[in-house]
Length: 298
Image 1: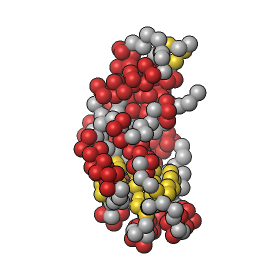
Image 2: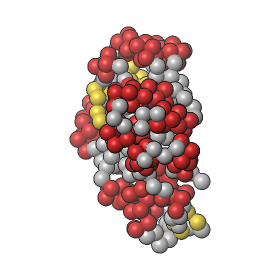
Image 3: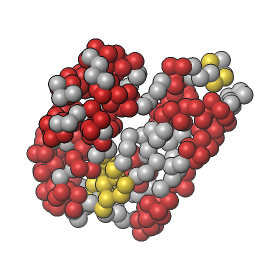
């Protein structure tokens, strides 16, 4: 079965949901047939990659797409990006999409900065990231930066309802769609995948596993406040069903006063593990290690 997030990925700018001001700006670029280097940032699942691919699709360009979470070292710049940018193109312009560019190492980002300048006459870069602060300032200054904000819940519900209608599903209850949206918003990708994964014999059947409480951060803060042991919090992580915990760092930072009086030490711990989180494969282990250190301050 084809994934809906790909099947219903917008192919024209008019079908892109939300961010009307940015859409209008991109429309002007496409009309002119030329763009600046672009940097899209915002929370996961809100359409950064979709918008980047839309731009490339609607320009007469040679395209190189790379996911920086898989290829984040300086060798990627030297072995893939520079050869692509330096060879003769067959179309008006070359576009390089670097998805999840915040995973690039600082050394790779520094090399990319020089690469952007060297090939500025023939090549444009589109970077996407969840965390703008992980992109070095010289790279940010070479790009026009846009924050991609999630569309409203109403727009998301309408979008999902259009998909289920197109798929000719039976008796889809709007209340079920609302429950999924309320649970996983603003991650539109997660919402669509959850609905698709809930299809049984042509009907959408939402079960409790699809509606796991996403307020994991609040639960962890409460557990630290109560000085619950690490085993309890590890079970919370496992039971949440989450595979990514990016948002947990900000929740802990915002609520430090609730679980410790040693704010400075807690901030250093959170910052340390937020940095390490970018490079580890097993995210849950990294989070558990951080919680173990924070417990010492409670």
